[in-house]
Image (cartoon, rainbow, N blue to C red):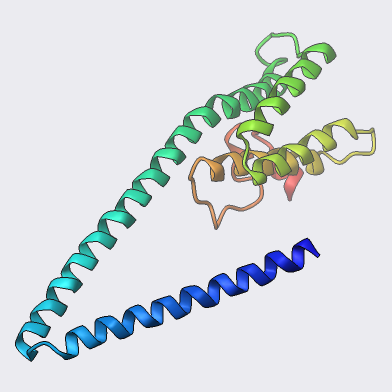
Length: 189
């Protein structure tokens, strides 16, 4: 019942707005019709100039505000994304660099911390890609193909790049991974 009243009130409000707008246009039309043609043309030109100026300022301010919000969000996202990439590289390169790979406890702490940060700062694409990445890692078995793991890693890296404003419509599978995996063609081919 309450929903029906809200819908009915909304419809009445919209009809009222249209009726009010129509009446306002009639009044304006009558004003311009009763004025000398030369003065009417000048008023129309002046009104159009003012209207265009006001619209330009409003749209410009809206665009600036959107850009500022986007920049502030990017500043918060970059450190989170750097942590993710650094952890992936730590796991990938620890043996080659003579470092100990992260322990299970360190991995759990990493996923807990990053998940909390992604809930706040991650876009939908990032949340989806990170969820797929995490699920793939949790479900690794002896039968898991390296191609499957590498695909979700690359999808996560591409989602990070996309969220930071990079465009990569023509990227092929393995193009990002090729930057740090020498034999990537053996796994994706």
